[in-house]
Image 1 (spheres, rainbow, N blue to C red):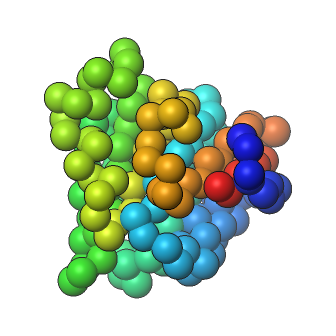
Image 2: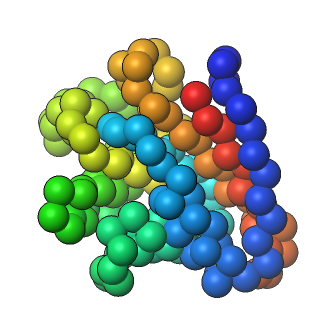
Length: 149
């Protein structure tokens, strides 16, 4: 990814993956922000989002992966998170039908599981984009490689 920086995190438990998501939320400054999460099933993407939502909205909310609904929304006052799961989508045309592109124009956080469908050519040039790649290292350990553009 051009013009990006990289950060690496090794988690040896679900608790640490949750904590990383929560810490990441506390460091987010510019909106709108697009966070793309990539990794196989069971790599910790939804767990990380649970931590992020808790840290960003400062309250506990039930977070589930929107595998069939495609998008979930979590709000608290003026803060909003759109949580997408694009595993079942075939291409960028599918995003038009769910109104995804409209979300990128407002002061909110958009987190997408299976975010590899979105490429730099598909998002606005001034959008703050983070890509986090999750890799299973062992039964409870995961590596998270974060790219910031």
